[in-house]
Length: 260
Image 1 (cartoon, one colour):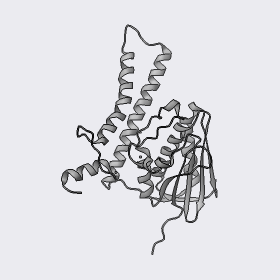
Image 2 (cartoon, rainbow, N blue to C red):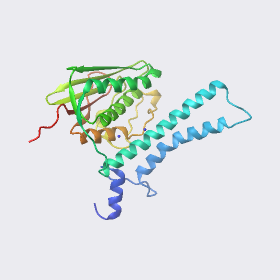
Image 3 (cartoon, rainbow, N blue to C red):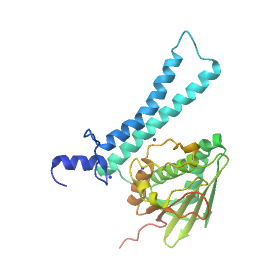
Image 4 (cartoon, rainbow, N blue to C red):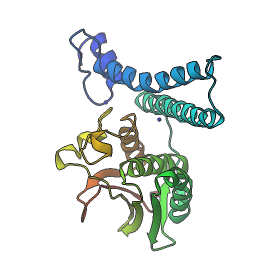
C-alpha cells in the first residue's frame, strides 16, 4: 500500500511532489516523518509476531499460528502497498511512468475490479454492486492504471463502510466522457477535506469509524489516483452525497482522440 531557488530547494520539491516540504522542529522533512510512521507500525507487527513464534517455552497453539500467519501476511501486503505507491509516485515525478490508453469495454474493467475487491470486502460483510449505463459503454484508458485507481477507491470505500454495508460503483455516459462514481455508506468526507484528501499522507479521522480510530492506510492511494487519472486526460474529485457516505467520482474519455 495516492507534491524554486537553489539546488537544495529543488531537491525538497522533488521529494514532496506538488506541495512544499514542511519540516519538523528538528529540521527533518515531514514527508520522511510521516513515511517512517507508516512503515513502523506493520514492521512492529511482523517483529512482535516473529518473537512469539520463536518462543520455545510458550509455543503458540494451532489457532494462534493461523492467526499470526494472517496478521504477518496483511502487514507484509501493507508494506508492499506503501513501497509500490511511493515507486509509482516517484516515477510520475521523474516523467518515467507511461500510460498507454486504448479503447476498453468499461463494464468488463469495472466488474473485474469489483470481483477482486469483493474478496477483501467479505470478512466485513460489505457487498459491492456495479451498474453501467449504457452497458456497452467504452472508455479510452490504460487498463492497468485504471484498475489501479479502482482498487484504491474500492479499498477506501470498504475500509470506511460499516460492517454489512454496501459499496456501489455506478458508471454513466457524460457527453464524450465516461463518468464513474464509487459510493459507500461510511461517515463521508467533510467539505473542508474534499480537496486536501488528495494530498500525500492526508488522512480523514472521524468518530464514526471504529470508535474514533482511522482505518489503516498510507495516505498515498488518492494522490496517486489523481495523478493517474489526470495523465489519462481525466479528472477525479469528491462529490456531495445524496445521503450519508462518500462519493468519489472520476471522468475519462469514452473515445480515442481524433487525429487531424
